[in-house]
Image (tube, rainbow, N blue to C red; front, side):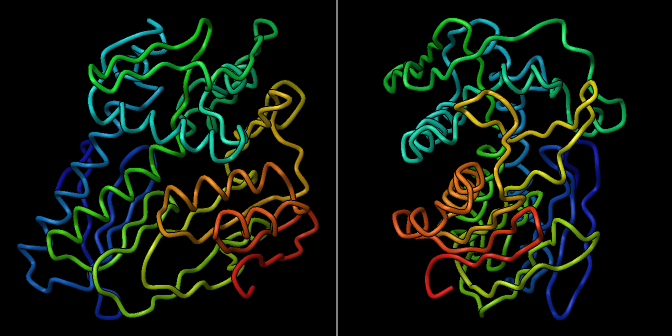
Length: 313
């Protein structure tokens, strides 16, 4: 199977069928416990790849021809049902988190050099800023017309859907594959969604301070898992090290006392939304967020201390 010009690889691990492929700028993995028939497995893989490719085509800010790029340039557009649903999901995430997960932070990301796909940014480093880029949060002012799918952005507003697009795609793929009789889980660059009828599975959480280290094992058979952190997407910007998690109240990379937060929730989108919101707000808000959002997980502070939160911890 081919997606983005790259062949999916198939292998067997512990009685499971595992397909690996590239999508949305990251390594992806589809693990199937059912069905056993190879032809049906390949159909499920094709469905998963179709969903991720469609989301990437409409929502990538690094593709100047994507719907999102056109919307950011023009300020208004009639968009596809996929992009409209993504924008609704992103605005809903902003609303539920009180603005901590803000889709309008793109100018702030550009100001610290995140102006191209991370693969190239990591190799080339960021370009010097041409000046201070002013930014204010405007997500409340975005206008969505459900009847026509017309979208209007406030003046000087640009939208980034990166994390939410991956999480939403994982949920969409999980729902589609379950409806087609599949069982297993899909991993889009660390954002996981379980689907179908499964026995409990163990998910390894990466240690942000140790190469190839395992922080914890989470056991579950449904729902989603997502991690937000500041140690992987980092680059040199001028004489400083920048990262991609913007504090919406300062417009700068967060200085939270947390390095990483992993959340478990009914959907991958919920897990990713609350992982990011929790990291930005810091350790003191973990228990409150877990209680109010009905999620659980594990965080790591700057000293490497592990902090479980939610459920029974």
